[in-house]
Length: 367
Image 1 (cartoon, one colour):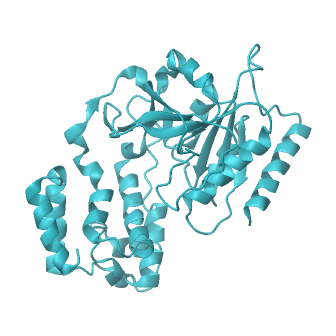
Image 2 (image 1 turned 180 degrees about the vertical axis):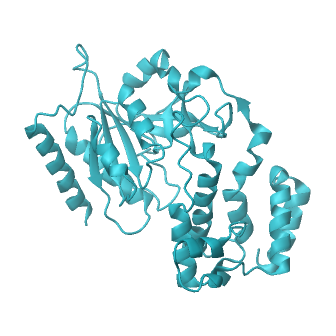
Image 3 (image 1 turned 120 degrees about the horizontal axis):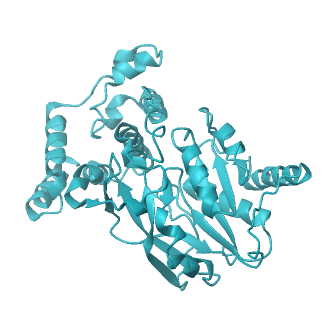
């Protein structure tokens, strides 16, 4: 389905809800002249956390746009149950962050065609820090001029939500809409427009919390899929940079800080957004299933230089009912296993001169 068709679907949803008498843009008395705050969120199989995310996002957002890419776990039903949420189908069959971002932005512009709009782009495993309610920075956000980029410190929470680490630089999670077109990348894309000469407002008090790492096994499954995607779509990218990029979290404790209780949303004490979020206990994550399909199509040998083999793919193939599950056995040579062990052991000091020198030598063997 084209972008235009997706937007037509979003318009039909909006019109139907208006006919049914549902007030989609809930504004407080005296705030008619204030901007509309949109939360823009892509989703695929996020049942583990989506209810908690939407419950909390409705506290600050006037409207939430969820673009769902074929969820099969109940995410769509959850989204439909929230009064401020418009669910739009992302019907593209492949992974493309730029396309889904444009779908979210254009849908929001369709919903509220006139007046001031502020976009906050969050994934389902993210949230504004709990201190947004009392922070003076909130008024700064509300009164930011059109065209302004809103950047926040990104706080990655470790399991238990008592410690975490900050991104090195503020991340542009928000944009005061001025109609600027957005062009994003297929993967790891900037989520919103950020024109070259646009003013940046950096928020220090209000943060964006990232709950991905609170479910370590789930996160690792996703990182394995990312590595396979890189191998197929960026064939010139060598194996060592891929390893370092998708194992950076293994050295997170080296730079972790204590989490202040006021940063957490209500109910986020020991797990993400409450006790239910990280207790799903999936045996076969959707990314595992996708990786099995990729291996089936391209062979395991294509991915022998990726450090994804701590997983028993044979057992997962049997669980999925695949024929010839032994075809998914670890294809690595002894040398490849040694390199993966060395990379894992040196992850906390990957930027040191000695480690970087060894990595340069390994380039001779194509690493």
